Amino acid sequence: MSAGVLAFLISLFASMVLTVPVRALALRVGMVDLPGPRKVHLKPIPLLGGLAMYGGVMLAIIFAFDGAARAQSVGIVTGATLVAAVGFLDDRGWLHHQIKLFVGMPLAACILLASGVHAQAFELIVSGRAGYVLDAALTIFWVVAVTASFSILDHMDGLCAGVAATASFFFALVAFLNGQVVVSTLAAAVLGAAAGFLRWNFKPAKIFMGDGGAMFLGFLMATLALKLRLSSGNHASALLAPLLILGVTIFDTTLVSISRARRGLLPFASPGKDHAAHRLANLGLGQRGAVLVLYLLGALSGASAILVCYMPTGAALLFATVVVATMLFAIAMLEKAPFERQIAKPTSL
Image (cartoon, rainbow, N blue to C red; front, side, top):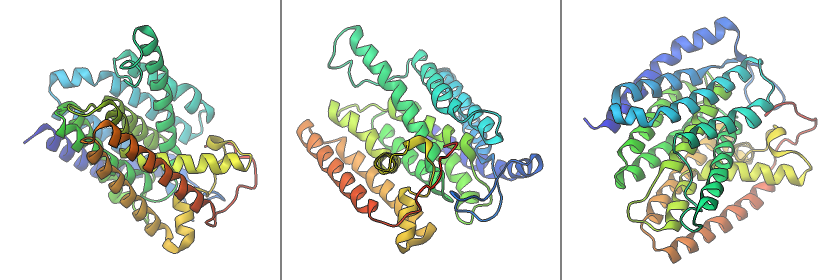
């Protein structure tokens, strides 16, 4: 049995099974998400589901990785543990919400940098230390942006877990096709954890992952994107592939950022029912339909990432232009869709 398949099965089973006692623990300690004006659920739902996914991924790393792979993953595990802990503390109400964005996420990104995981967007075109400094800055921005985008994506039953599972599948596939065994195995572990949790999180959800779980998934998505390398692709394809795999969360974050900025709101500090899933649901798809449409969009975007891996530079750049134009057109169309506008200054993400 390959390491990737083993990691997937361990993580899937562990996440699915661990969710049951984690749910009981959340109820016992009173960690529940209460209904509210910006929520779509109508009764209290237990949080802490991210703890089950965390356990699934960690068990997969312990039992499916060999010694060298485990050594390579120390920085990743440390950063993922940090953001998960910060998220769980925020779920409990023990941290100011801005600690997540301005302390926890950047610190986790610095841990990745220290372990040798960083972007390679500028080093190949800017020589010397300047290229590394630019890539280091990009790494921190990327980790914070993707982690935060998954944090705000967790607003509808099954959405965040399903989008993460879809992206993990394509990260695993692209990494496998390019001979990156460690990356494909880690992605398979994340896929198993998200899919196992989705058994309990798809509508009607019996448990939520909480910010701890959403930030944990977001950090791992950002990390997989940074570690993904193409064995035969060009620089443009190498940069575009991970962006396409994460197309759904990038699209949703861009939509709410533009929409909220146009209304004079701070994008990451103005929660509301104005995400892509909310708007699709209001168009008549309902919550399940909206979530399934975004799953499909994630699958199409991931499949496009595989295609772009084999495109020459010119074709990859042309494809990127088409993707950006399509995304902006879709944003303009969804801006016309009905949504619940924020009416008060929010206090958290």
